[in-house]
Amino acid sequence: NTRALLEKQREIDSSAVAYPEDIPIAFDEGKGATVRDADGNTFIDMFAGIGVLNVGHANPYVLEAVHEQADKFVHSVDFPTEARLELIEKLDEIAPDGLAGENRVVFGGPTGSDAIEASIKLAKYNTGGTGLVAFRGGYHGPTSGAMSLTSNKSFKEHYTPLLPDVVHAPYPHPFRQDKSPADAVDHALEEVQAILEDPYGGLANPAGIVVEPIQGEGGIVTPPEGFLQGLRDIADDNDVPLVFDEIQSGLGRTGEWWAADWAGVTPDIMTSAKALGGIGFPLSATIYHEDLDTWGPGDHAGTYRGHVVGMRAGTRAIEYIQEHDLLAHARDLGEYIRRRLREAPTDRLGDVRGTGLFIGAEFVDEDGEPGGDFVDAVQQYCFEHGVLVWTAGRHGNVLRFLPPLVLTHDLAETALDVVLEAIEHADG
Ligand code: PMP
Image (cartoon, rainbow, N blue to C red):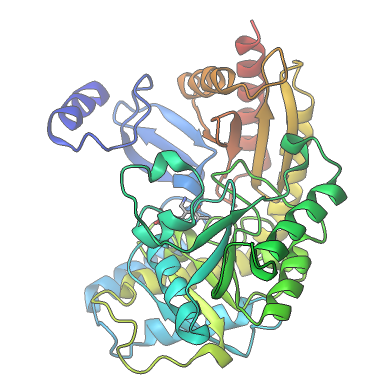
């Protein structure tokens, strides 16, 4: 069945679909932290649709509200609905200190990129500026503004010119930069300061600083202490908004609601998507301080201002995380997974890092250079042995774990047995 579906997909679907060619899997059903393929094989899901399914596939508590809402109506543009107001209030309840009780939410179109575009527009609208500071290794999505902020040239080389006024600063990555955490932070902050304050720095008229508080696609790079607070200070000194892209790191993934909470730093603008739609409904939001609420009606418009079923699902998912104390569970299970990874019997493991269930294991080759082929081999072995894992990093050399927060300790243990076996196997 799987092969027939794959063949048909190849025949009729776009050549742009990103599907690992060597690994035949077609999904048929998902439950919690497992998925079943079209031939009845069960997999442990350690990537959750790229960090979307935080409360698991087909979470019954969420599904109940989904069915109820879908029976009533699905699309309301900007007309008020209970579903919309309920989610705005829920987001306020869990917003980082400094935004909680003082924020506004604008729902965007279905994807994270929509929230990024809204953030860029909001920052420009409020400052009258044009320029943006972004970061090397950063990923913000496939639309033109989001691609401009993304640093990897391979995503954008065919589409230039994009936004003209974006300068990428270094993101502190002590392992790859071979620097102490403090030096990596100092270096990055000096560069940001130079971009904004030095006459030769590159941005004549800045509108904001856009950063992932933990880089996802870049390789689960957790910046050392002091970096985000340093950005906060620089943004304040230069009177520009600080924008946190929490599309991958947010909504409990790190064992706090937001990566911002770990740092104790409040952004002026924050993006959310992925897990916001509860169990995979497409929904994004830009959450911003009420002082920036200067748009007039229709200044940021769109047909899809939040999917009503997705909003219901989002609120329910947040409630589910609260009621089952899944933030604490994510912190504990994340510790366990990182500890197991560090025990991998190989000298190809360069670094294990992450927060909560936002975890990366970076591999190197014999010379200490990024080991992308090694990670491909590990991923393939895992897929063949019933564990779905993803990769990340500029060289594809980071094994990425973004399991549903409902993953049990038992399933994690089984998955890690397979992952460690895969690493041993790849090591020959
Ligand atoms: N920002 C971050 C941090 C992301 O991880 C992603 C998606 N991986 C995006 C933005 C773009 O989101 P989407 O693919 O939903 O447009």
